[in-house]
Length: 254
Image (cartoon, rainbow, N blue to C red):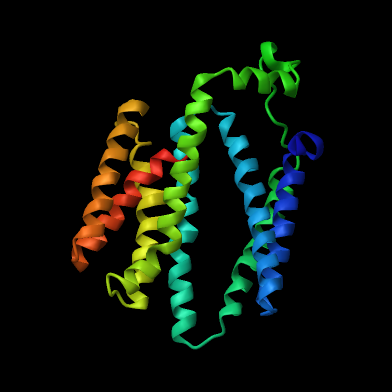
């Protein structure tokens, strides 16, 4: 609804504004409540970015293209642990890192201002062009796949965020990995595998696997990988299992 009211460029510029404000707020190392507010604003901007750009790519109606689009999220996840590790080793205060996302959000907002200046979302087909939002929602509610897909999507993101947010602490406290090593292992999960290789692999033109078969194999493999990672204490095996878990989770998300 917001995208229809102010346009795609308007939403993207608003996303950049909230993300930049949140990053700038944290960059000055404010009290903890203000840091929480900054994180909320960054999350708000990131959410607008995610949904708006996804809607742009979805007009191409290509699952492989959507996979490639989401794989680019992995670049930032791959670079961030190295930047944070370098700042920590140099003894630089933690808040300095937030000047990086602030600068990038300003740059991205400028790019969106010019790239989406004349962008017009493709019109829908005749059967749905004049259908109101209420009618679309009613039609969607009657679809059984929606009621199956929503809880599965929630669980998928729950698994993803749980692993991503707690993996470093688990590796340090349980697997006895060093802080530097655990950060690099996290980058392997988030970017090198989970957000890049897995999605790009299933987007290759010579990979012909149906979504149902492919996702079923990935979920079964993921369950086995997490079980091995949980029960076996081995540093080399931990790297392999983390990467494999990311590979299996990536293609299920978009």
